[in-house]
Amino acid sequence: MTPRTKKILVNQSVAILCDGNNIERSIHEITKKTNTMLNFDTLIPKLLSNRGLNRLIYFREGVNISSKFAERLHERYYGSVVPCHKSADIPLSIKATQLASKVDTIIIMSGDSDYVELVRHLKAEGVRVEIAAVKETTAKILIEEADYFHPIDKVDWFSYTPTKTTKK
Image 1 (cartoon, rainbow, N blue to C red):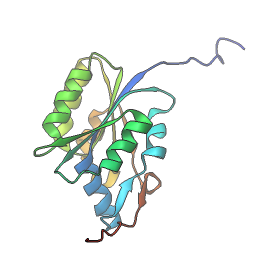
Image 2: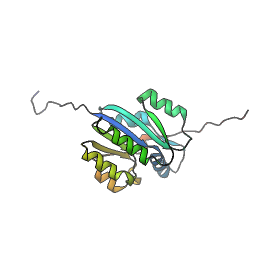
Image 3: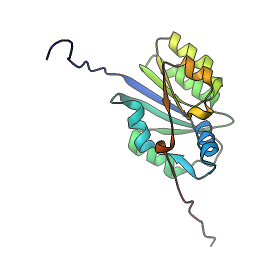
Image 4: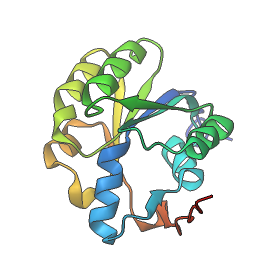
């Protein structure tokens, strides 16, 4: 193998921070269904692209967070779900800033233009910042500011049938 064809392995530590409400609203807007969820089992490996996962944190406003979902994220990715009092913007931004010295890349799963200043700050700190979101609902300026954009589309979500609960 000549030096020109030798593959260089890059060992990067990646944190994935998801604004759950933003991504869920985006998917629901595209599908016109509220029973559609991200398929983390296909999406996370695609986002990582053979890089190491340091953290996966799913920020979600509201109290209706499925305990099964939280358990699944923890079991598969040692991920966690963080309930937010209002929007995820501030808690996600604080966590991203805390992680900036601990990881090489932060992937923000959101199309919200509120994250533009966070992206600029993280890049100034030497962190590679990638955005993963539904392109049709993502702010153009956020895509432009990021080092890389991962479009989330129909191969990255699934529809489910809500289970009915019976009253006793």
